[in-house]
Amino acid sequence: MAKIPDHLLYTEEHEFVNKRDADDEVEIGITDWAQGELGDVVYVDLPTVGRKFGKMEPFGTIEAVKAVSELYCPVAGEVLEVNAALESDPSLVNKDPYGEGWMIRLRVKNPAELKELLSPDEYASHTGQ
Image (cartoon, rainbow, N blue to C red; front, side, top):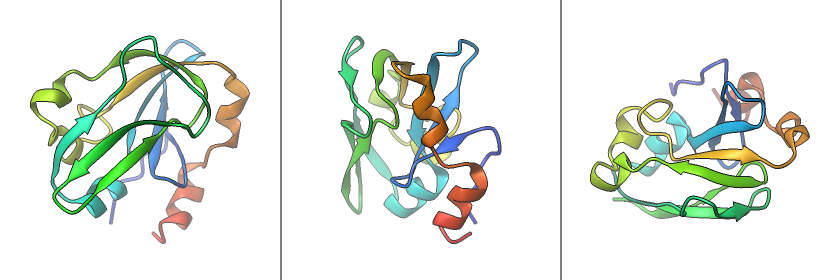
């Protein structure tokens, strides 16, 4: 059974959102369930700092042994930081998806969009857990 931390928000496309200390900053990555479905991650293509994305717009791709998948931005915003560690060790997504395997930090354009994301219970139901 995949881990679904209680303090995160989720999308139906299997991204997680971790609210940071600042009200308008979040950390985004893929869920434990998603990394398990993908298998061994071998490459992650992430955007540059300063790029802006609309809600659910693709912000990158993740390549695993089984498949290549797009990564979707759960809320509109501007990229503040990318996880450079994933360039040299993309398997961090498999080892620690909610910690060292995060992908981007984003300044949220419209914090009200966070209310539209799935709660941990809703995500568990979505994934059949």
